[in-house]
Image (cartoon, rainbow, N blue to C red):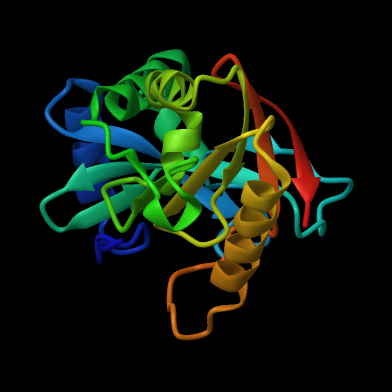
Length: 207
């Protein structure tokens, strides 16, 4: 994901102009999933918690930060930007923009079409936050209860919680393979799977 080179020390007015345009609908804002240990997380960057973890240093913590999609890359929003872009509207816009993306789910032949995948597609990992995409996953797998893996950024893998043992074992194996794949330069998110019920994240299981 390309990050806009502007910085808040030298280009604050330019960034504020971008935030203003986003608040007016000229640019789109999206949630961006990050590990809770991401080195750019601080008290300033705007974030919401997806998986709380047991403490601040818990590697299972997952957050969503928020980025404005500009021609020169994403501008991460900070708490100060809420003076320009109303927080409630910002969150509503971000998740509506995510829901509005074209679905990228497809059946995984490697798991005998008993799993769904979305790889290297636009906001693949964030789709777990999209009620529209999760509703489609429920329908495609004919299951109200799902396990969702986003081990590394740009990946999404889903199975029914009621899948047979062989499918669950393959799912866990592929999750671990992706997590440990050093040839894949994408950021690690978390070594866990989400438990999703009726489109909502209701828990997680460390792997």
